Image (cartoon, one colour):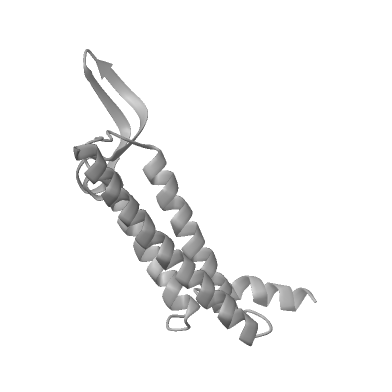
Length: 143
């Protein structure tokens, strides 16, 4: 009975995520039909959103300590941790060089995806590299 409730909640979360992804894809396709070529901010925004989504998926996949009686959000908020590179092993205690809660990685990626969405919509600018003035000046003198 408890597993059925957990499975139902997980399916609801998956359904909500799929609706958001499908909506964004439909919006992007509709916008791309209106404009012949995507602008730089739109390309950067889509790349950022896709990259953040892939990092979230990767973080959840490599996480440890999944509790099967909890649903996805409960696991994410309370028990999932990314544990990499064993530092020390003593009896029953293992320490890791990298041991962080998965929820912080997911939150960071959600913020990056939100930045990508605002960049896609043209609200925030695409980050640009500052030109190196000393190198450009030496190039102009050499030519």
